[in-house]
Amino acid sequence: MDIARALTSLGIALGLGLLVGLQRERAASALAGIRTFPLIAMLGTLSAMIADSTGGWIVGLGLLAVAAATGVGNFFRDRTDQSPGITTEIAALVMFAVGALTWLGDWRVAAAVGVTTAVLLQLKQRMHDLAGRLEEKDLAAILQFCAITFIVLPMLPDRGFGPLNVLNPRNIWWMVVLVVGLSLLGYIAFKLFRGHLGAVLCGLIGGLVSSTATTASAARRAGENPAFIPGALLAITLSSCVVYVRLLVEVGVVAWPSFGAIAPPILAMLGVGVCSSVAIWLMVRRSSVSLPEPTNPSELRSAIYFGALYAAVLFGVALAQRGLGDRGAFAVAALSGLTDMDAITLSSARLADSGELSTETAWRTIIVAVISNLAFKTVLAGVLGGRRLFLTVAATLGASIVAAGAILIFWPVGLTLPTPSFGSGLSSP
Image 1 (cartoon, rainbow, N blue to C red):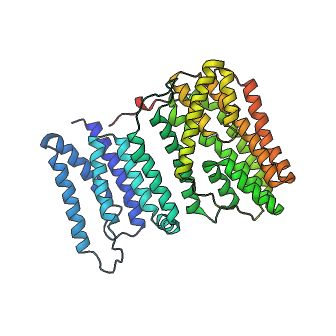
Image 2 (cartoon, helix red, strand yellow; image 1 turned 120 degrees about the horizontal axis):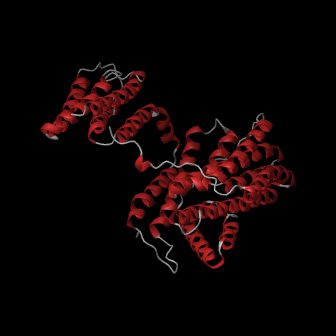
Image 3 (cartoon, rainbow, N blue to C red; image 1 turned 90 degrees about the vertical axis):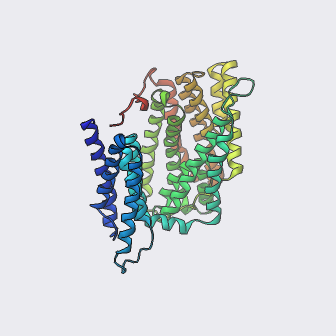
């Protein structure tokens, strides 16, 4: 037996068991706490070690023993304990399996499961509150997201179609899943923390859902009531700033090997957006205003519309780039950026990752779309919110437009960030 590996596995199991046990101890669990959970996790690791010489049945026997022990503990538990749930019992079984996984599998997976278990246990009250706040339409949106992710996505063919062979149905639908998932995450976060962060929360969540929709909603309120202009300005600025975070996530997901070359200009724009947001926040932090919550983003019609738009942009970029070179891709970016940043970002990153588009052209295409999107939201704010809001938004987003233009002109060629390869990362102990 490799002593170093064995001690490492036991140490990881001990640490994860202590983490979950500490949470259960703080929750005043009558069944198991800060001593029992580390023992259960290490029992799982020891069972897995013994299984190397005796066979896998020993792990199953250990799991049954833990289940029996929790059953006996429940039988003799103080009857004044009014917690009839089986959360602690299930957590004990999970931590036994986590302990076994530290030896039999990848310790990183075991660590992820152990930490997730502790987080789920700690978020009990918030999750109950969330369940109480969700309406029927919210549950329908979650189920719909699960359907398009786990039913539709695996059934789609994973190969290119079309004249240029760039329309891959599974890739196109994966982009739908990615964007709708980000939107749904923002919507649920709003449900969790509603009423505490006001316009700041609406701006941050609005950037995940749709900065354009957030701009329209905030501008409409400001047009109806001029006193709402500070809150509208803050929400519009913050949502536009969060867009850059969303773009970075999308590039990282679909084109991680090219992330270091594409991300730096977007990070520079994020820095400009953060500075603008902080300045606006310092100006309006005493304003007691709020914005309406974002609408449920996970509608099938919206998902299908985005899928069609992404496919059209993907085909348009490939066609324009092949026929007109980089200028064609920039033209498509300027047009698509008026209404949507995700499609052009995802398609450009995907083409750069496959080698059909240079990384420099990819990030320049994204920055062109950023300029187009910022200009459109500025005009939208003026049309719906009036002259005063237009002037304030133009000053804020205009600074970002100027910065984006400067990046296009003066950005040094070849500037990249190091991007670690996860495939060559730490191995199992």
